Amino acid sequence: MSVCETLPDLVQSPGLPKSNEGEPVFPEPWAAEAFAMTVHLHQNGLFGWSEWAAALSSEVHKPGRAQDGSDYFDCWVAALSKLLVDKGLADDTQIRGLQASWQRAAEATPHGQPIQLANDPLR
Image (cartoon, rainbow, N blue to C red):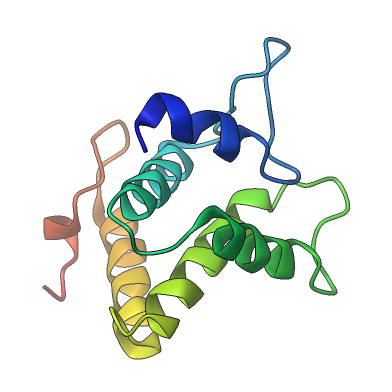
């Protein structure tokens, strides 16, 4: 399936923030990257859209999620992480370690500079 064929399916994801033109809206660059990773992994056969939709829906509908949808891409990342673990491509320890590393890198990066994992002082 090409990106052109995939995007209409992806744009139908429940709760996906969209512009007035119907295009996905990303609150931060990391959200666009999570979106792109999901498309890439789907295109490479890691999971089908029904499997993705079920994983994302499960996260979006968990108790305590923001009623205004402001944590939509947090749900997206949680769903993608769960699929990676379920498929045996990563484990929770690896994912949490990378999350912590990115957080440290963000805190160590001077304002206005791109955040790079190499900026993590513990790497």
